[in-house]
Length: 299
Picture (cartoon, rainbow, N blue to C red):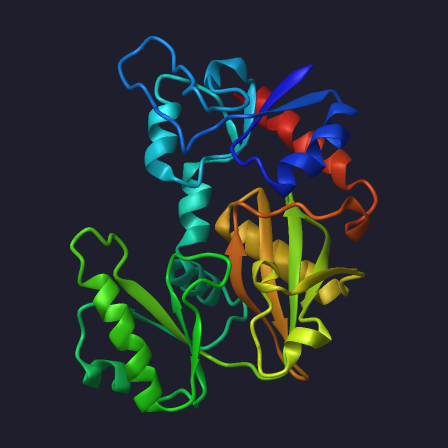
């Protein structure tokens, strides 16, 4: 039985355990946060409140490198565990501006976007959005789950949002002092496509329930949206596959927005949540298990 390290202990971990076990892969939780991490011991020992597996050497392969990169470096030091999505894949996807720039350079459609690197004057912000039409979307460059994303309807509102970002970025300990401003695509349908080893294996459409839809526009599941399984059109599938190939990430969630006349990639996620298997294509777990085994065999 192949031993798989999973560094999250939430929805994905619970959903994949049984299907992967049926395919000869035993999943264990490699806890990389909210614990003590001895740095000089021969082996990493568990904190009293630690649950699950805590020693990387107990695993043959890992699914996704720990999201907290500092803890990830400490817990994997001296261990040759291969990852389906390694540190570089996580870093690539987390840099939203870098993803947008790389995809645009490759001819993959993305929203009109500009990155600001603080500190900059208001005049620089105003010049940066001169070619964009309001409203615009402002988002931190490396946050997830829709955290810190705002919509600004005019320049004064935009500069007000930027003021708050300036306060955060003023702290010396803030590592990422960049943010994006993007065009707002009104009435767009929001999809998350899943790509495994170069092939799109289905996806979901994220919609706000009627009780939340009035006056709201973000479709993040963590903010109340519902993910409904859909039969993605070929154009959506091919776009997601091109995106994963361009970024070189084998296991990737690709966020798509579709309007009446455009289909664009907005973001990617190299730590994608696995939804109910019924929302993906037949053979989803066969393909995921195959990628995990291939990663282990290449090590």
